[in-house]
Length: 246
Ligand code: AR6
Image 1 (cartoon, protein in one colour):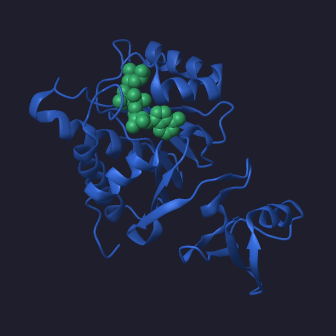
Image 2 (cartoon, rainbow, N blue to C red; image 1 turned 120 degrees about the vertical axis):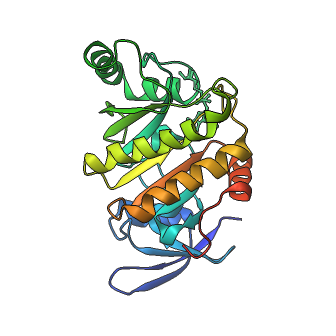
């Protein structure tokens, strides 16, 4: 059966129960806005319309859980589809693309991203981008305006510095975003694919680094952690260390 929702518009009007297809139709008819409040009957979850649906593709996004007063959102989806100021790329030191998220981002974003990466290599990083560092390029054809490229540690290569370097990826990416005046950033689970970082350990490191940053810097409004599968998101939720009261 189709999920049912209640809508509370910014004018305070309530509608419901209504199904997802009606929500879509109403949105397309401009009767609803992305910031209208939505309540889902099946699990009592509340949020904005945009928390439940990517209203451009009308794909289901489903934010699983918020932390730090909603400034951190955990969701299952495709990072290349995120409509945020910047998405983060789990790149490699060459900045010339690769597999995994890197391949997906270059494919979806088109040649403008690679051209900007080549320019960064030529001007600032002739030897390649060091592990833990981050750089920014335009987002090309992506819905995100920018891509922040960071190089995660290959698990086991840096010995005791693995966690510190993974934390650096998050910290330096967020620092770049703030410097550019951005408000929303989406991360994939850096290093947990080809680079072999165990998902449980990475969850603790990433959440600690993000929490440390956001509690010191008030300007970023939204940090999305985007997992490819529900299973990866569940593992993250089990091992994250975000402050409980946030
Ligand atoms: N959206 C969200 N998450 C994704 C997506 C996607 N479209 N695709 C994969 N993931 P990986 P790494 C998840 O291997 O471990 C490249 O070749 C995936 O399930 O992309 O940092 C680079 O060029 C995993 O959890 O990055 C480097 O050489 C996470 O994204 C190397 O891989 C990261 O997986 C970097 O390896």
